[in-house]
Length: 143
Image (tube, rainbow, N blue to C red):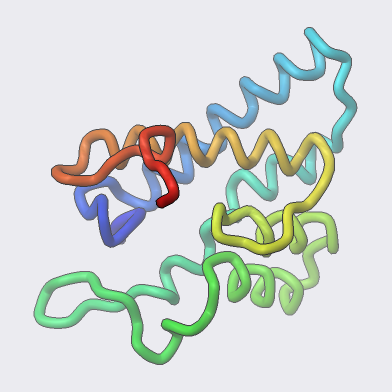
């Protein structure tokens, strides 16, 4: 399963592991250097589960991974939040997963949210930087 339709050679599992690794490092830094308080269990769960819906948002057609047409109208993160809520995960984790995407109109406050945000973008930019013809987020501009 690729992480993205734009970075098909970068596996979702690799992305999830990178986000978790970077997020833990950022969390330790924020706590030690700035005294930022956050719930470590909530952060770890959000880091690991933030892209849980990608396996349902994509499908294979003729050996190629494409957006699943039956779920194309769902914003990334929303389906994941629904799955986690149904599974009984805490509301804090559900909210972080549901609002973590850069396209989300709602941004959750708190240290867990910004640590997840930067860990995810760091790993995303790694993937996009390696993908042919895809700009990392930090190089993209709005027109």
